[in-house]
Length: 269
Ligand SMILES: [Fe+2]
Ligand SMILES: [Fe+2]
Image (cartoon, rainbow, N blue to C red):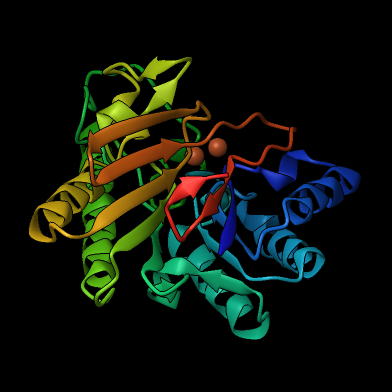
């Protein structure tokens, strides 16, 4: 199967013509299906933009959500709205709910949103304040210590969700894992290098990374290909010969396909 991957498409930064071009670029890749690794839009327009894209693509669209998708809304409410949308729009599949998706005889796709969980770097001392901390209802206005605790809780929930999905992949030899936030320090590419300790708390989901590491150790015949975004910088982190993390590039207001994956051999075309 040919799986086209795009990340951080930020459809709210595109004009209607730009959004149509985005769909056309994905269609023109000749893919059988599309995977989107979050930051698709912002809460008020997310469902409108997702439905528009799915109808233009007319093929399965598998996706996870990123931090921007919760802006001007709440995590709980956005996820609920997306679930409702997926129940009536057949092309759309929210991966945390959809379960493992068979791609071919030996490969499956799973996905969780992930969230910068504050576990790497200097979450208390960093001077960085993200819009997440102002525009996402569950995080807005929290003092730093409470924010750190809330981020850790969010990361833990993502890790548990991924564990549950990986427990259901059966005998698959290859698993493609879609997630928004890079799971390892080495995968937080920004300007050609991993992020520094001020950005790392928000640019990595360490708890998801721990689940991925434990899984490859427990399953020696299985390889994991992780697709993520969030930092908008491209790079590949080889964590193990069976655990490779691809971080996709993105620019606000521009259209980019991060890659087209041949799932039969887990390589990019
Ligand atoms: Fe983004
Ligand atoms: Fe993001």
